[in-house]
Length: 238
Image (cartoon, rainbow, N blue to C red; front, top):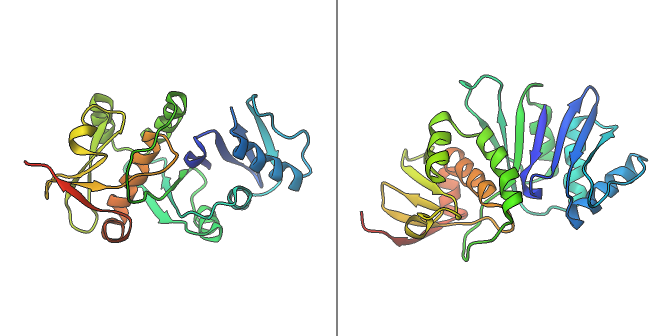
């Protein structure tokens, strides 16, 4: 099983290796370096990862426990969603709320060995749109594509936008990258049935990760998201 940590710019990947975990990293930020240095110290692993190099570290804990330790090393107080994609493309993606490290650990421990997972921060209300660097967007886009359906992937490749169906109401939402031209008309999240933009964003992450968080929010937690994480901002004539 492999976990992508998109909320850390996609620079850290955890993969299960028997009873241990292989951590792959590249071009770490200061916060990422500090978090991995803490894990290395806990594991009595030397040397600590470099800020400029890419590499791997074999950590002594199972994947679920390593994922929890990484969250704790980051001191992450914000809330997360974690999604799981089975090897069979016909099996729907499973998404769970991971508001605590313990909840995340339980979800990972229960997943099948061949599953691919990604953990992202929940989207939040408000403007303005955040910014991100092109290189980090490319890495986040690689993770996003793993969790899109074939139809969503085709739409995203064509116009950097795709549609998602709300779990509770069946409404159709348009999700648009904030780097796409059409974002000026539709915003990042647009209710196609009610014809209004939902004011929502994800601070400090690349556009592709923001789309993944919003996709999971409407497809798995629609009413909860609309009632507490976002609110209508303005209407666009049909």
